[in-house]
Length: 89
Picture 1 (cartoon, helix red, strand yellow):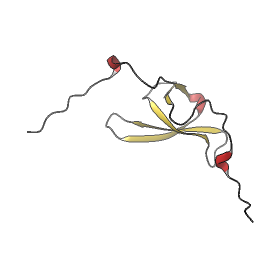
Picture 2: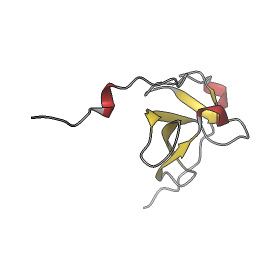
Picture 3: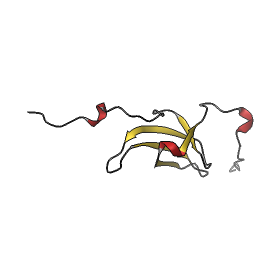
Picture 4: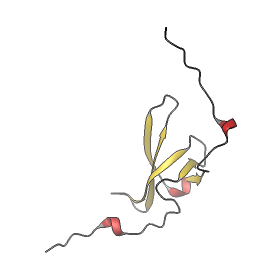
């Protein structure tokens, strides 16, 4: 007899969904939500977010939904900062 419960079927009260773009209210990089909902050993709903740091490294962290704000999915071209890369001969 199957007695296990499936946590994946539980609904979340988070205003965010996977794929949403967010930013910390106190500042920081734009991040993509990869998971929204309960996290083991923590009460309430959480967001798992991923972003690339200033060195191009992929980062991920857990945040409370009240600590972030929604960002538009696209950004104006003028806000992109380009970094020159030296060409190797």
